[in-house]
Length: 514
Image (cartoon, rainbow, N blue to C red; front, side, top):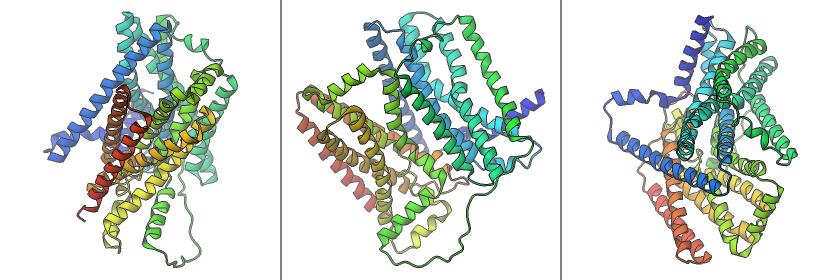
């Protein structure tokens, strides 16, 4: 038995290295670093430090505000709820990638290992990654609450919660994905589609349950916080119970044999030649390349479409009907309407900044990148078509956000118009920056489609840079409002400065040497 579990953990270590290339960062340190690597590492570390500092500041202000209102006990519940929401989305994202898109199982099945060993190893890999996310999210929360309360038992509360929370979130999703993969094996088709559909149904059911509860969820969430420290310590042991439980459940569902059937179809008709403009042809090529591969769709659209649903769900859970009506009244109030517009713009700008479609546009070409240099279409014009395509994807997310702002928060049509126009300009700027970064140094060597997006340094660099610019704009707008600038002046500043940045980045792309 011990040998079997040692084999499972060794497999999880191997699967982690296969799916997360940043775990091999230590090998980069042994090589002779070049200037690009040093500058990039220093920039990423400095940006992470800045964000973490402001994260500490935001949590401290939140605790102070709740303490003044006599709601200090609510701080732990809110932070654990936020962590659970982030882990649910990240867990679903990781499960789809590791269980469906990763090609390692095709090779692992050749070895004398049980299918349940492979599936359990993948489950452990997802859980370990969720633990990493939890450490980043909950460590500042634990430090701040322990500092204000002066009670060391807070550490035990957060350690026990962090140990069990990923399993509570990921375990039902993993079981559901495992069942869907078994059904796909029996049907010999639609492996990814069934897994994605199962996860969507799970989240839709949870959202419907929350909406039907009418916000009557409060006391049961405080029950864990009030538990005896000994019982909280026992919750840590439940993490091992979840792993063992998934092992036997996967063995029951999958059985002794598991096979992967290639998805796809053979065209029976020859393709007809259609004459069209270069712009239309290249845009169609980008559209087909992106949407024909589920790995690109899931990874590329993750940050664009998930924020609107999280926005409504978080407000619906954390606020009752009276609070929501108060928010709607504030949105329509003349003295607060402009602040409501800025708040909505902040959501849209940050959502558009988390965009992997543009910053992986050239990397997705992979081994066929040489074709971009021989077709009768200049590389800079290809880059602008990629910007146009990725911007059209971002606009879809902006439309969904604006619909939620209109239907759920009762924004006026004038407010929606301002939000849409300014948001589209910011989205165009972020896509230009992403394409420009990926154009300079694309990642063309990859064996798995998800590596072009999920493990691409250009994506990380683009997101960090766009969020840094967004933070600068928020700070400048706040200072202008403090100094008495009118709403029209702030909007004019945003429009003019964004247009100038767009022109500068366009000039950089146009002057790129092929």
